[in-house]
Length: 558
Image (cartoon, rainbow, N blue to C red):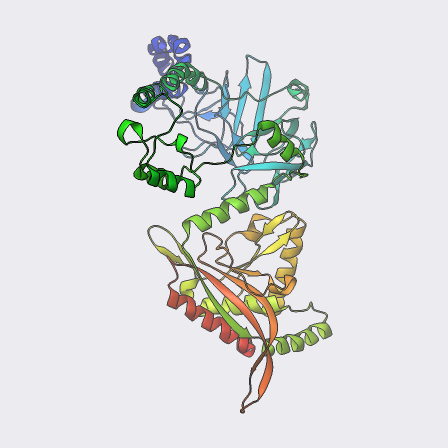
């Protein structure tokens, strides 16, 4: 009774609801929030909306009148359009932004910081209770994704843990699992759908199989309102401003009237000679001398401004003919290529790179690799590559010089205690950098196994976020596969360093005696450093440690 009396007391505000609907939506939400809070915050009759896990849509009332009883009715939860309140978690979108939900809203697992699930009744359209599944955020840098394929069809029953679809993120293809039992009523974005924003509805599920047909023609309501339409109203003012803008130059046109009206151009001999030497037309220069004559200073000023005569621009028809004569193919950018381009551009623009190069003798390394591979073949293991040995040496050097195993932030430099090495892998889909975790603690055989498995996943486009996130340093090798002698790599943010590995080549080196010489194989490596984190001396110290492990590989086995 107490709750009902409060509702009646606020009936005047409720009668104003139609008027508020025509106002700003965010203001409407604040109005109802204040209204509900004032009803439910007085004395011992305060009501608390609590999470329960046994019965969907039930509320536990904490007031004395109900004495903690369970109520099946919603507690003043009529929801209206809200702004900027979409939450995506565990593959479920609690959708409020861009949707006009009329009717009653039943919620569970509601906290003050997140809404994991929202079920809604839309009485105006006659739709039954349903759940909207949004595009999940499956990586820290993901803002949009693509639907690779659906593993469930419309009408299929789904259970917790079952895979609904495969989502192409900015780095890999990830499976999206179902969180609750129900039926897949409608697929909003089908196989191959591109550039779906995080939180955008991709499918609808219902609890009852009989409700599936009611969503046959369902379309999510896009965000609308007065705000997008308001800019056109202001456009006439802008157009007027644009029309009025050219008017100021008019007074300048009156000045040439003081000069002679004849076709003859008056200029001093020195000005004519200077204009002829620089291929400048005197008719395009305004003179400042007596009666508008052109002086030497006018020519020099004209040349300084860079306004030399240019050849006539080709006509539009000629330009079109030239373009049409060039054969080309437009290749759409994949999601991974877009993200790679964005992050590399960010790296070059925001990170102060500098580069250190050193040549390392790899004769002992090659000999040790041959001996280890002989043991691997005898035991049925996989062969160890030069790159595996490079990864191990880089990891040990990072443990020896931990300043290079760090990341920059505005307030501090974060130094990592674990060494996780990202390895650049080129695929048909783009560049991937899967991570070998705890590379300093793993043996060469384990590193070789990890690299081969991760490279296979990358080429199959089946890497999961755990396979490429969390690296602290990157190794990029273009020497072995492509024979590149030396190159400089771009730092992979937020890391502070990346090692570019070139190919090994035989060189002639001085021998022990006079006139003697020997042959040795040398490999060039270049360390790209973030100067905010790694000073030049620290980078040189790291390269010295790395070179020591490469030229004395037995020390890596200790």
